[in-house]
Length: 94
Image (cartoon, rainbow, N blue to C red; front, side, top):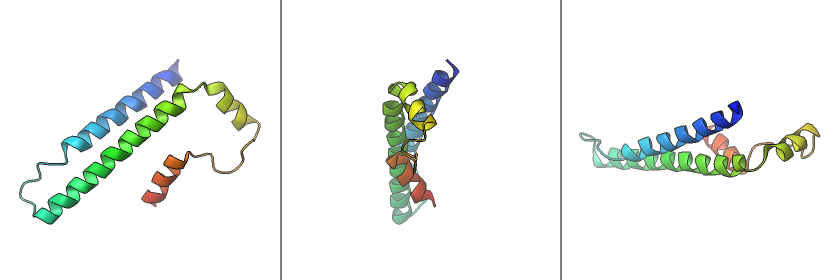
């Protein structure tokens, strides 16, 4: 039960963060046009990342957890355990 509640909260937080970034695309008065364009682009990118994480986690977490745990416990699929979307996000941050 606790795990499911944590999953729900993560998804709600990602929804909130995406909405926050979407709301902050505009309204940067006093900045030159180039700066405003950069801020809009960054906010759009961040909102897209939050939406992508929400979508990916929803797909991943809507599947039963037992097969995932069994695969992990049996050491099958050694190598990167990160989802490709998450790997790309980690690479972007480095």
